[in-house]
Length: 571
Image (cartoon, rainbow, N blue to C red):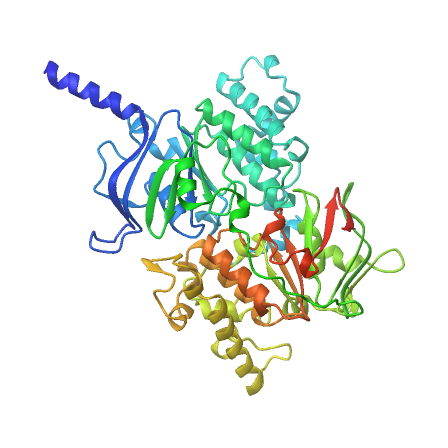
């Protein structure tokens, strides 16, 4: 009895030193037998107390699959003794409360499959859109708003210690993440970067024992990035909670990360950061920069003006979001739209596309918005959607993920700019409700062209889900795959194809690489530089990274920067 007790105590002590322990096991999707193709092969991964880990790899499959394994969303064969999280299995807290995943690579599971109106953020008129950031973080304490705002909890004798601690944590997090001035804004009014910071703060308020952050730096501006990383480091060091980060291959790895689990082609390589990066020669963000030759594009001076903004303003009561914007976009232009989180980039793009209600109110002589040679108010929004190709986080999150839409049909919706397949073969119906035979044939050819130019055979072995790999199936087979069944990165590639398929005069690429793995990014950059965008088409790229823009200064790229709602062309 004593020997058995000592053995159990020794086992418990050993387990308590392991945060993660998966000893040489395959990982399968639930429902797949051991004879099926595993999602991850021969995973041998140990995380000990005091180590700082990043899971680096595919934004579309393997990296996220490894993080999902820690949540119990995949099947490990053979199951490790004590489970994959030994130290947490010894605690009385349920694992689903002890471990929490915040993913910025794709929409949450609760979002459902139906399309939702992502333009609601510009009006915020529905009751559900009036929920503020503060209310979303403290929904159960709406009656304590003044207590939280005034930090006067010491005057409340009946407030529990738990609420006090949470309120102090709330104040600390909103201060460090620069969210205080946003607390009383509707959630739908926050920028993408602000929303990411708010989601991290909300996750920390849940007080998990282990926090998994998948692509937390995507969409976060340069100014905020060091602050966010410093906070995450201090949180991890204090083990309040422990943090494991998921990063894309092209993301910079924070200095305080000590170990890396590299996921490529269904295999996981683990070890100290320096050894892993030296072996693969992945040192910095610039390591994946395109080395394609300059495009040698000719000057487009005198080309037709597609967009002309003169003193464009957007206001929400006392908030002045865009201030007297002057910007012209001509045929053949390549623009890099820059600005910190909350500077107004997404609002500016919504004015360009006509989605913003205030795009109708820009009228001479005080302001003017001209799109394709005519005032914005003269264009139907459906016409603009057919003439402007868009990739954005809002579109990605809102995209309908019903069970019946194929990859082909998703791409073909780009001709008319809609969100559901229309017409024979899903090729659309055009502005007049019916296509001629020649139009229908041209559209079908264009779908095949973008599939051949950007399809999975160009992605260097990226994961396609359901046990498939890029290069392992034909373009025809991929075109019939269900869009909703694809991993996040593959969905992003399909939506890029959709934006390009109709050869629209204007293309807007907002965080276009989000969720993609390295092979996908390389393929897309090569396609865009190699003729995927015509000489007469204009492109606006939104990114916080200079080297994520497919074209450089030598290719004639221009830069427009927003700061505090004011815009200027950078010389």
